[in-house]
Image (cartoon, rainbow, N blue to C red; front, side, top):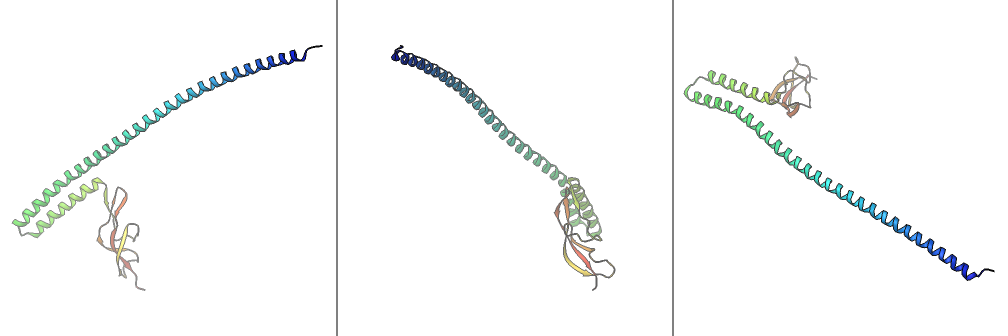
Length: 185
């Protein structure tokens, strides 16, 4: 008959050996997981650094775009002002002539030329006058200041313009203030 204590002892040894093998296996798994964790941490740090770099780059681009936009606006204003200086010169000349001459006709024609020059400059920049008189009233671009009874004009047609309206590059800048016809009821 076999001694039970030897059997138990053999099984204990096998159990201890299995436990040691399991411990070694767990240690290898922990080491593998630690290596993976270290690798992922390194990736995270790289991504974070890249993100910080990109964020700084975006901020630099935004600053550069703001500077460039300010410069473009400054140059555009400079060009417009330069164009308007010739009109200012013409106005000064007209005032000088008006003091020396009492001819209102000459003064008027000079002012009309100055007005045309100003409109040419502004139209070149994108300003367009809204046509009003003789057109149907449109509340999107016209503002009615008054209505007048007119037998010879259909109702809703603009018969007078009190103040001109303008669009700037297709966008309404200021509506025309107009007088609209009304039929007798």
